[in-house]
Image 1 (cartoon, rainbow, N blue to C red):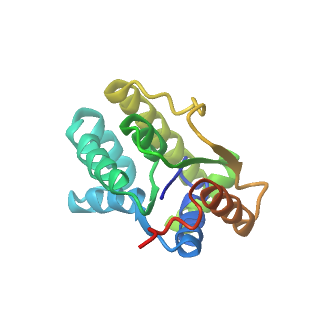
Image 2 (tube, rainbow, N blue to C red):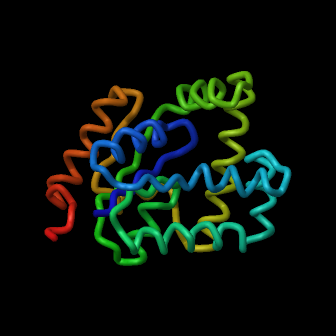
Length: 183
């Protein structure tokens, strides 16, 4: 079983991932946490690290290779901006989910999480999204606005976290059963 959860900063993927992985009994692989850890290792905040990655493509390639390798192993929920794309390109069967949300609500969520004013979070989100969009297109030819690869596109501004997680869990069970090996 492989479930991918992707979305822009503050869209609610982490909240959903926590609930879905517990519900399905699979490991949660958090690409965002790995990205933040890589930034901290270099003494940078996420926005600075994104700008750094623009001129150091090895950063994205390293992260994406780790995530792709883990996706191929299966039995996990992979949460990252490119998780669905990575699984699709690797030909890995899975349920691919994109979580969308209004940019103002996403900024409020990021501001609360990071302890910054909403205006700062909104500006950081926009800068990060522009940086990632440029990098992903240059490195892989991926357009994050192309949602055609996803099995589900869910709006976390319209659904409660429980309803969103329930929809993802239901889709995974419909595709994989309980997902556990028969032995």
